[in-house]
Length: 288
Image 1 (tube, one colour):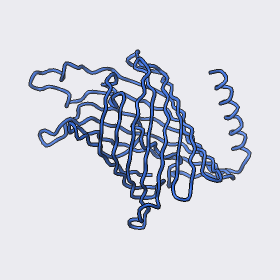
Image 2: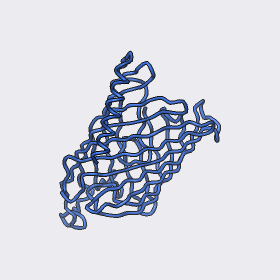
Image 3: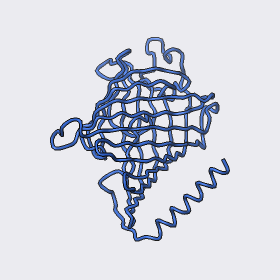
Image 4: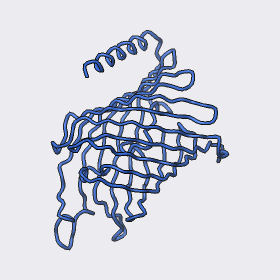
């Protein structure tokens, strides 16, 4: 750990010196995102729905991430500061002309992103600080028996964590690739059995030359995988695989339709101790 800290400190000092030795241009509310949300990571801001055919449940995502400030340097290095506000909910059925929402996870915080262009792609990094809290809501209440369903009462679940992600984007003639790794540390966790450290990594591959453009926008076929090592209390691996199509340029706004297979700890933190295996069909809209 000491060696890792030393190497990270040297890299930070080198990058700081490189950045501030150049001319800087500033932009308020830039038109694009410096660091695109990781598509197979469930803890990312998006707007969409994921349907699970085996039981009819829905994962409903609401949220967005926005860059507020952008600093660009002579060598096209970009440093941005942004905010993240998002939530996802478990809908178990439809009753009384409304969705029955069983559980919800909410996130809010901010991020700093740094990208460095390279001949065949770019280096990407993001540091974000997030507050995550989870709740049971009215769809988990049994009105007939006047009690919580399955006798599962709410857990005061909280995570305040910082996360560092570093990766590489590479561009080829017919496709693009992104791979990354991340480490997170929670300064506050409830319940206390949850480990403060977690680790993740992932890969995204997209091709925009397979299908002809639609409405003058490229169509991207893609595969994405995200793996997370999370202790609750024992460390176990959770993996999400996605296969999909995006109508729109890969790093711009667009509509995504996808298939998902997930195996690991429940996405919903009120059920953090459950291991699940789920196949889903979904879509989301990217506003970037």
